[in-house]
Picture 1: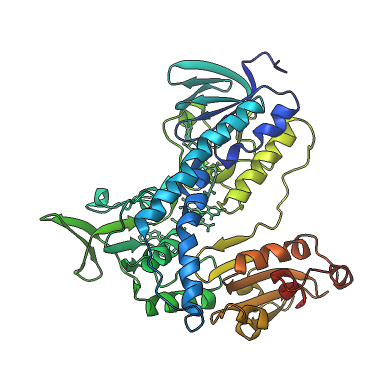
Picture 2: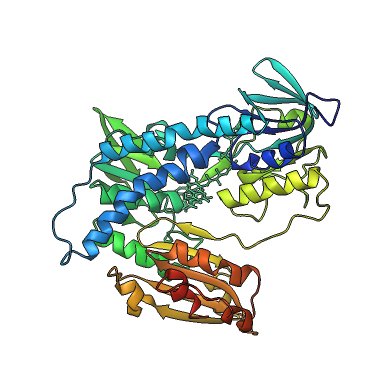
Length: 444
Ligand SMILES: Cc1cc2nc3c(=O)[nH]c(=O)nc-3n(C[C@H](O)[C@H](O)[C@H](O)COP(=O)(O)OP(=O)(O)OC[C@H]3O[C@@H](n4cnc5c(N)ncnc54)[C@H](O)[C@@H]3O)c2cc1C
Ligand SMILES: NC(=O)c1ccc[n+]([C@@H]2O[C@H](COP(=O)([O-])OP(=O)(O)OC[C@H]3O[C@@H](n4cnc5c(N)ncnc54)[C@H](O)[C@@H]3O)[C@@H](O)[C@H]2O)c1
């Protein structure tokens, strides 16, 4: 039963996390569909977060063994092909599993390329469906450098499907994907060269921590070329090379272009309908409506202050569902959204960044060398630092951590930051002992 005179009350274009609001609407009796051109679950599920973490698992194990090398003896043999096979076993069924879950929840999953025909009509590979409201959740695609030979380079999706690991890999870029994949490829035995655009890696994170990761990877044999000025990719006699700098050339077996991701704004009717977008994505108001009011946008495709991460996409999509159902009329909130780079050690942060707080009288930044903490010494961590950012009432407003448990440490501190807990409230939290939560909360 529909609540409107259209085929659907709400249609989501794209079935990634930007469509996570669909079940909320279906539960309330709205007739809902998701349209997906590739795999249900989108980037994160199929060729992003989840797939990457399966490749990271053995990296964590071998790094732990390396740190305990005098205690746990023997060499660990890393088997890329076996791990990739396992990745397929774990990740490939997810899309079908999600689709079944959505169908059980009463959501129609329509496969094909969606094209907007008018504000209420969508073509799906020749079939027409109408909808009262439409949510565009079409995400991003990998940037391809505009240089000669660009077609010789691969993207993150290709890396996450490599049956065999090439002996030498050049990675262009030094952001999230470059640093995570350099860590994985290096630990599995590839010779890796990272071509940096400028002189900063992981520029969104506190630089002394990011530099410590660069130093550590350098000691492990990764070559970093700063200000590389990559000018061309070449193939000659079946051999690849990357041209860079002042006429230098780096021979290689495989090239990863990790120079960012760009919004999917072409080929589905945005221009024809006059929906406004820019190079960062679709423009939305604080109800996530586009300039065509019954058409919303959620997730990576939006031009907002939210980081292009899975939790942002889910949060935005659920907000749209609540706005459409009338549960809220308020503008979308801006909660604390944490982020982490899955290097080893990881760097994670939430709230006010250290670089912003450090020269600002309104904040106090407390640095700790975590390698002195007995709890971190349990697994022999020798690269672990933390920066807590407090406001003038001594409430925690931000944290950045570099350690093997940084992701869990930051997650555990989120309530203190998000709820602006007072010192008294913090004292009323009793974490179990010993635990990462106990270790990080005792410093507040
Ligand atoms: C390698 C990699 C690792 C990542 N790791 C993390 C991580 O560890 N943590 C994290 O929080 N984030 C991570 N991200 C980011 C995360 O994947 C995205 O933020 C998230 O997927 C955004 O969800 P979305 O629904 O907006 O877009 P997507 O997940 O990209 O979904 C968009 C969907 O729309 C479909 N589509 C596009 N156009 C059409 C059309 N016209 N018709 C029908 N379907 C269409 C696409 O096929 C796609 O499935 C990673 C990204 C990458 C690339
Ligand atoms: N752990 C995570 O949460 C995670 C992991 C992977 C990806 N992601 C998401 O995916 C997005 C894309 O990842 P990414 O690593 O491709 O992007 P990024 O923005 O993190 O890094 C892009 C890199 O490319 C470089 N670059 C930009 N233009 C260039 C040029 N013309 N020549 C050479 N280098 C250039 C930049 O200096 C930067 O180092 C991220 O922004 C993030 O939203 C998140």
